[in-house]
Image 1 (cartoon, rainbow, N blue to C red):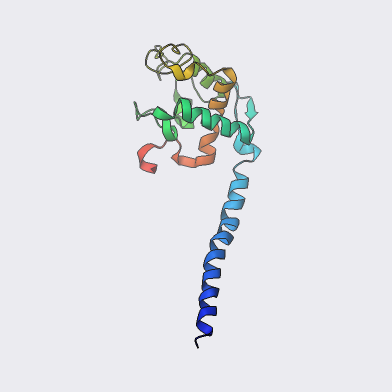
Image 2 (spheres, one colour):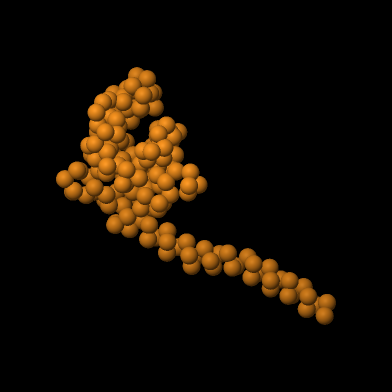
Length: 170
């Protein structure tokens, strides 16, 4: 019985080591591949409904720029200073003017207005207009803003309802 026990233990250990890898391949592999398809990476480019498809590399660059420049206040697509206004697609679409396209988000990052569009908030919200105060905005160009906007619009498709959902999902 003594020689049997070590081989049984080895078999169990082998199974415990192989099982997580098998589960990872079965479940994470297809999901990871599916999240970078063109439907996921395609978002409205202009308010008129034309679309643009970002690459996985552009999405990841946009995520880095977003986290570096916007993530302090908008981690996970929320707005820490106003929990009622997130970066989820529905909230962006209901803004005045709607902010649910790449161009409209770039416009906002250049010269932000209140959610109802009534007045400028560039004195309290980072933007290119207020880059003298918000120094993180100084190094951003139009393409960087485009990548950030792309990330904001693709993120809900990749992360699901947690993007912009706030504390209830974390």
